[in-house]
Length: 220
Image (cartoon, rainbow, N blue to C red; front, side):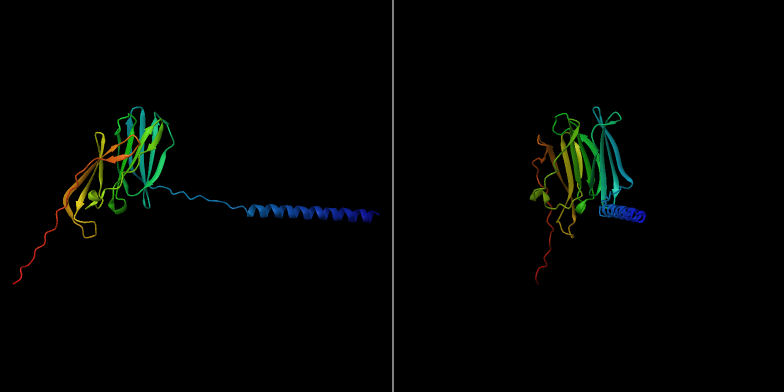
């Protein structure tokens, strides 16, 4: 009788042990089957541009850091030492060259214009924002040049704020291919900011590039 009881106890212990092993094995399998997602974050390099601008009670901190292809632009807005809103971070082509404040639409809200150069085909660019109700509202990108203004265009844009206009200047070439040569002339286009947050070009007279002269040899 005692042997029967002992056999039953041993069998029960064996079942408990097997159950524990299965439970441990199941837990391990579940752990191994769960995918671990790693997020790769591009770490910016050295500071390439830094400027603090103040308008009213707000201070705008603009900084760009080098990347393998372009720069990372960071914009922070402070009132005193406190951040007013989440920072803006974006990658830009080329390099940040300047940052200025403006009020092109005359509504009293600060506007921030960050100028870049050396992007695709040497084109300059503008990253622009209007600060309204403690938040940034993007200003739409400058529209594409019209066909007559694009004649002789090969980039190298320069931007500045003059009064309530954004002014864009670029050299005019004899063509747009690799053999194009500079004419020594430049084209200027001025933009206004409308109520919808769009930069609109003002009427502009295109600069006409001089035609290359050809000399014909008279027949004998």
